[in-house]
Image (cartoon, rainbow over all chains, first blue to last red; front, side, top):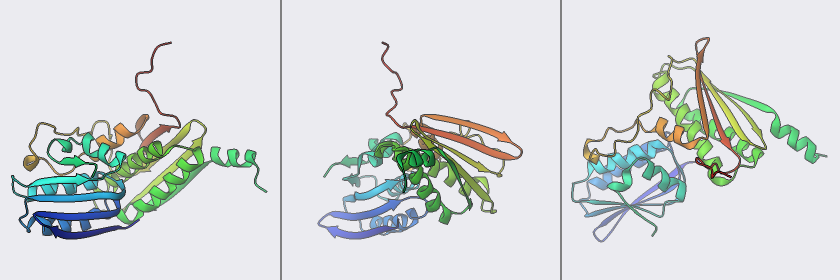
Length: 103
Length: 157
């Protein structure tokens, strides 16, 4: 299943909305969007993942990449991830530096 | 007319898939695995774990095993009332996922983290049983996900 990625700015937050499946084939699209988002200079990058039904480690690599691209004081939030996706994020230990939120 | 007995027999039958080791073929492997998960009646969580594990191991073969040099991956599966067993084979250089596992670097700050290396760890923590052998020039990984939720430390009777 393909991945659709959208990018917008809401106040001081850059919003990336993902729908579909995030794996080795589709993660490069997410990667490119993160690069654009990092250039916006907002205080928060919010990644809305409620529409992501599957995420492999390629998605984790994108999240680590996002942390490395943004300034230290920028908050990265992952919002609405389904349980197996948030479990994957926790397994990698990324919940220590990324804010996982239900809504 | 398909009877219940036929369906059970079908579910017990082993089936196989062979694809080129490319990122584009990973979707076909995922569909194959999800069909087996459905035949075994795995719940959503167990099916997700099985798909993730096979996807990560197959992705590793594509990205690192053949190192872009081409090759094939064969996936065999068997589903039954107890769960699903998948065997992944490739002819890339020997690689034992258990030896090559890289656990998450929890203490390392994000900016210093290596990007990647977590796929094998995710795969091995997603299945109920895992085995590896290298035979006749082939890497052979065997993954099992049980139909019912597995209690890693079952209570004693």
